[in-house]
Amino acid sequence: MTASEAAKKRPMWLLIEENILKLGAQGLSGANFESSIQKIAGELDDAGLKVSTHGGNLLKVRWAVEKAATVGSPLLKDLNAAVDAFTLDDVIDPYAATTKLVDGLAGTWPELKIPERRADVVKIVEKTRLGLLIAKAKGMSGDDGIRLLLEEEVASENIINGLEITEEKLKEVKDLIKKERAERDRVAGLLEKVADKSNEEKVRHLFDKDVAEALIIEMAGVDQGVIDAVKKAMEEEIKEKQRLAEEEAARKKKEAEGPSLDDISPEDMSYFIDSIREIMEFSEEEKEIRVMCEQSSIPKALVDIAVSDPDKLDELEKKAQG
Image (cartoon, rainbow, N blue to C red; front, side, top):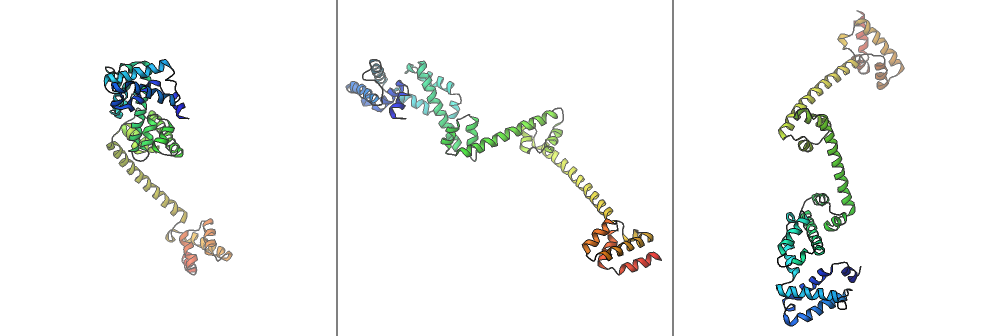
């Protein structure tokens, strides 16, 4: 876009005021009054606007210069000063901020109350708000600045340019926020199911569903004390479950290994030893012997002797036979 095309898209009154601001106090003096009007008209002509040859536009320039000379300072000087004094809190609502600004300047510059001009001032205030938001975002750590601008519904293009980040980074943060919102929706649904339960039961339910502790505190509306109490109770339950599981595993292991040597009857002892000897005739590999003995339900205590000290089987057999 050329300079003249850009100028044509901007409001005439604002272009005039910008040129008046450039004049300085000397340009508004009586001696330079007419030359200042012609200077502004010429600059606007050069920007592609018809001013010198357009009676109406030339009158707008004259009236604006006359008003600035009467007041003793340009309109834009006062407007810029008021805008520069804004904090982010002042421009949370750009329309309310514009009303306050225009009302504050209306005593000197009632022209700002003209609907078309007020709309232009709103845009100036919105641009100021954007600049303040970006400045705040730049001072935040991590992705907090990006999140702030997304929450304030700042356009993606402005976020990318203002924070000097890539489209990929912005998409990454957007996707993360989307997942967080989905998780919040999930937690809200979980809480609905236990709405009539105690805080402790709600917390336990959310813990069971793998909800993060911080989110539980926030969405269940409980304090850290409730969280800690539930965690302690759950730790005791987990320990008890672990103890029972270990006992069960030991029982199954013992059951799989079979009885000890002292618990094997003489008849069973003779039978098991005969079975072992048959197996050992088939293979001399310890691993194969153990697998076949296990398949034949031969007690592990007897198998251990068979693979480590097979001669002791004769001794055990004689003892079993009396």
